[in-house]
Length: 222
Image (cartoon, rainbow, N blue to C red; front, side, top):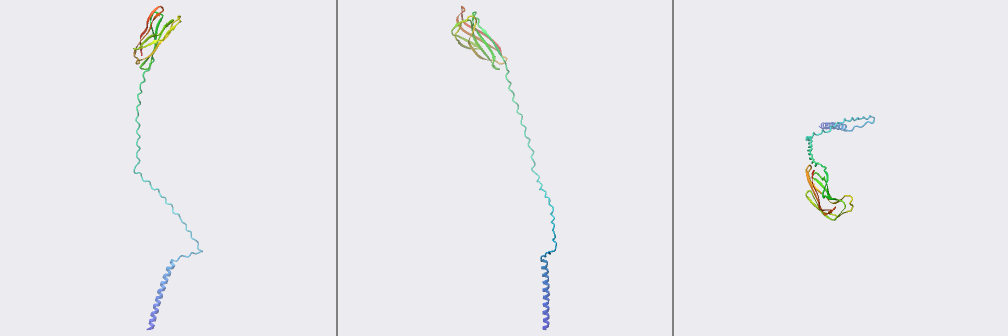
């Protein structure tokens, strides 16, 4: 009976040993498989050639289409033509230059002479210039009243004293002068009356002479 128990005990120990051996072997295999590989100094190093991967061309992102659209340019309106101002017609130019003289008729060697000169002032007016002279030989006269009517307007004056001793020739002594403007359109015929008077009231060459008068009615086409 004791021998049988000893055999059973031995058998159990053997079984346990076998199981322990199996477990040890299994564990060792797992440890070996996970252990690092020891490099062999004699082994040639394996060169690893890294082949660069081909560069991948990256296409630039396409530009998003402009959905707003380019606005059509607005046409610039052409400036309206400004009509040229109508030129104001220039007044027709005229050149008028007429002159003459009128004299008194006393029947003696003393008379009055009026020299007149008409020119165009502009397209609407004429200018009349007059000079009044006493024409005589030797004379000794004091101040005397005088007057002249030009184009309807009368001018009065007082002449200065006149003293001329030379009796060999006639002398002209200016006693008055005037200038007036006469309205006259181009082509118009204008009457220009002239009447001059000088109160001598004395004796000359043995003849009694009162007022000396020189007058005429001129007609001028402007």
